[in-house]
Length: 342
Image (cartoon, rainbow, N blue to C red):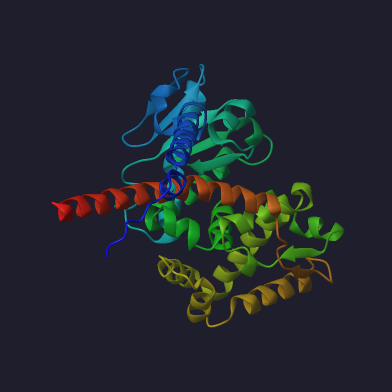
């Protein structure tokens, strides 16, 4: 005896996926994408969208500038070439290297222009494969060459290791330390001792491994921790070179591609744990009188704002991918079932 199974319309409706969920997510994603490329940093990939900017270039590098600032742009073009040569020398790279295809730079004459291209208020950024400089903030703080070579080093790391390895595996303290040390002058390094007099503590570099760690440190004490952080990693990197030699820096950097254990790699290369090396550096700073007696290390506190910012970034990237993969999988499964039914 065979029976007939009846299913109500309500039950059928429950089993069927709601198409509006996917539609809302896709529409929201494309709206954010359009806004990013027409009103945000995405415009850096398409300089033709910036009709108010002019450009000048040599045989490889290109500088986009605003208004009649052609002389400033030509100076920046020359400084960019000098910075690349300095980074080659520091890293021990041959002439045929990551800078071979050239670099695109943007020179902003006001903080407002800079913010519209980067969505931050720093002196400079290496973003979307471009270098953007906030000329107004650079003046009176550091030299133009210092700003260029700092951001150029970030660009070098991304090209050498790839974007994802550079972001997720290359220690941020080491990247910022080398970039700051390459500068012509670093007020953060020179004034570290003075900044430690009021607040004699530093965030240990063992907790400054990822970009979100660095952003949390920069936000501490309403931004006052940033100067100590840049000065610390600059002097610590310089200490490692003076004590162990530039060859150890090259050896350490060469082993950081897709490396999930950079601290253990540091110990293998330098023959000493990272925390111990940092403690010895601080001891030498205190003994020389550069840092006040009683200066200590603290671990990085949890920052809710930075956490939510990175959750938002990851959601923008992975949620559409999830729905796209899900849609493709369902289409393939449905096609297989239809073929089987035939």
